[in-house]
Length: 374
Image (cartoon, rainbow, N blue to C red; front, side, top):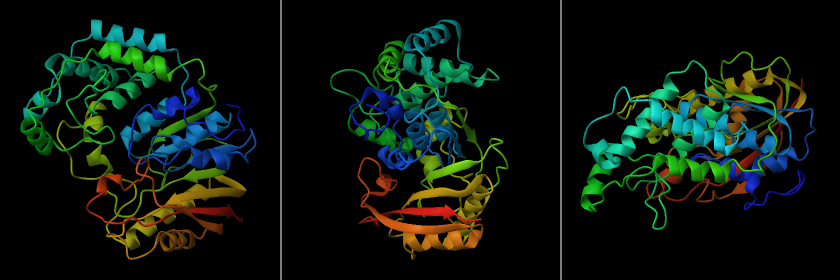
């Protein structure tokens, strides 16, 4: 696959983009196609980078990119999209940790007894405590951590073990009470999983010889409404997909991965999300702050491309109205050139997938193309 070809979904070059299933992703082809018009010296920015899809599209094209996200899980996954390491080094690091570390604590309770085999949970906790101990993680650590996040929970496979947990979805973690009830009802017990063998298989598959060259860039854990500076140079391209209005359970749906990164072993129903969903007015105001802060980091005539949608049961306004009002309120020079239909979200990449069955039909997604006129 050459730099200018449309992405081949079976290419080993894009395996790193699938390192951790994450329900808020947009398809890699969206930022990739947009960046086919970019120059190698351009800088790319995503203020809602999620799992780093825009950053990986830029890497495929050899373009420097930067991202911001307020969710620690998203941040950890996106960081891995910018590293280039050897699979054997990931396996060696994992074996070193499992052989030389003992967990400080192992969570207790019905959920943990049903979710993981005791030996599997012990090994997960060894890795968790290791990642929480060093002041700075190197690229091998970042890659290994993302692999564990991607295998922490998922379905039981008939052929070979691909996930560490008892039967669960792979894109989000079900809540403890529901999970235990489900496992008991279906008499599903957790299997002991050879964690090192799983890491070996996953790392060999993902960090292969076809991986694109490492490009410059950085992913920041922070609030893109207020972040003052990421780099001394300014951005030419901004490609992003803000959280859809009404979708405010990202952190709760990722609670198990968040625990692995140092969070609570219980679901925290508070929210530290950078964009609030208390009302349409508050949501629009927060988006406008992101657009304004982003404009300060961009060169004149920079491109802002937004993939956006909404939940029909949550918003009285259309996605176009919400975005238009947020850009007008920002009052910083973003001029909308085109708004196109992106069609109905695909089941594999819709932000609303976890609401299926409760929200009815989905509102058609839109792509918004804007230019910074200053």
